[in-house]
Image (cartoon, rainbow, N blue to C red):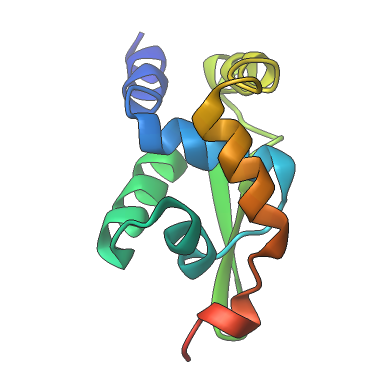
Length: 115
């Protein structure tokens, strides 16, 4: 039950849902790209990603200057895997998500991230 609660708590924040939906649209986003779309502070985005990572929903891989985050498609948690599958179909018509989906393709880390 502990793993189930961890996944549900991770998904209880609207910004974390937005991050999951962004990663469904575009794999490998860094903190600065997520920050630019959600207009949140870098530490806030990092904390959200840590919660999602601890719940087994996302994984981060260091690549040169960036840590690239993507959905954890090999999640060992059946709850995490089930929720990622469900979230793929949920909220796509939500006005906030539609706006994010419009913005996301134009976000380029080379333009917004300062090493």
